[in-house]
Length: 240
Image 1: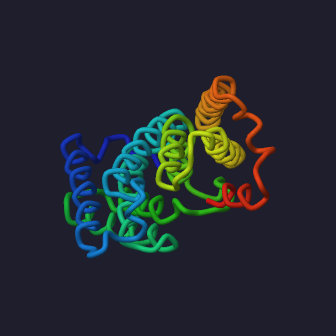
Image 2 (image 1 turned 90 degrees about the vertical axis):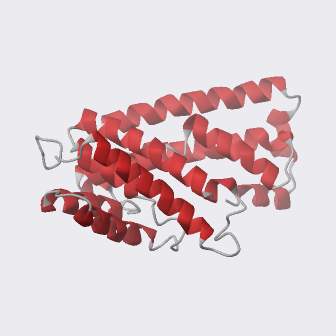
């Protein structure tokens, strides 16, 4: 169970200020790079996409935390900061850098309890952990589960279909691309621990599966496309 803080240490106004800080930090991360930064030509590596992803994770993480008895404030603040360094740091260090930024912000923009600051920063630091989620605090678990869930469902499907255009693929690849979302969803279903996250991921998988079936029923021969792909094309489609 998370460490309970009975009185919320973060007011609505303070949280709004944090959101503005994260938004502006992401924008500045892009503007500071002469050539647009790492893979910035993909829209989901833009500041706008990253902030939208963060806000999705904030909402999901807070919902999971509330249902699972975690510290909701610590979880949603950690979710807000979890990818703040994503556009300026390498993938393998962005979590640690995000924790550093979160600690600096929280210790200079209010009088938050040290235990609260430590709890938030630990969740940010550990949100890329690939091991068993039960090894982590409940707040970190809720954050990781929310991060996984945002990659599946309608949002993940829309982004995967958008990717087709950037990779010069045709609409005939749509079913296979949606299949990738299903694979991610099944991976997420195996990894999540909480009943709340498990319920959400299965609900989202059901919707994505329905959409894939809808595509294959209305677009002639789409369901047979995988069988007709050359080995080279199939391998290229599987690379992500």
